[in-house]
Image (tube, rainbow, N blue to C red):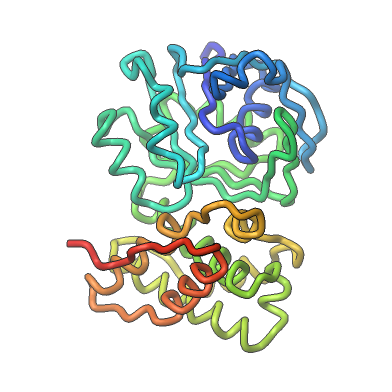
Length: 304
């Protein structure tokens, strides 16, 4: 298959990692940036990663150009405003959102069509430390896509795998989306509520107990939503995480930015009551994050 044309909407840690890696592989990559930043934004992405340190050339645009794949990697809190840069959606073959949470999939499909949006998740710690400069901190980057994306992106994922990504296609979309959330929600909520890296959470018996309780709650909700998840897999996986690993939610709160609390905790707090599942630990941790978030107030009332 010939090289694909990609656009990256949201050139932060995740978008920058994907964009730099695709450009390194020889695909065409366009970064979608704010119009006022267009002239000053670097023409190369610089990546520091366990997969290698390199620079890769990219194009820049204030609007999404005609592409084979649009990767959306903005914060969930900025999703709707960022979509103003999509002025001609019919010129986009596929949209692959790499946002946290699960609710954005239905939102994007309603707007752009079910067949165009390919469900996907990424598990990684990666950060933009300056425009065009990305630091990939975790020893892993796990990219999972719905099997619906295999015809278009099968070769791309094979190439990403060769440079260090762990890539997989998943048939069951509920399992795909909730498998990330059962890891992410307890990790993000606990590290942010306690203001500790994961090692500081797991190394304290009381904090660890609350994290484990949150994992069980999220897994119960995920199973009720049709996902095949296992709390023991989460416990084993996080026990191998680098002790200094911190969540993006924790970093957002430290910097005074709005945390992705609705995207990450909202599905559990809304779906739990709908299925008759109590989620008191998730509620407690989310409330603690709210308290640390400089007055951010969110509504987690159950939705029908």
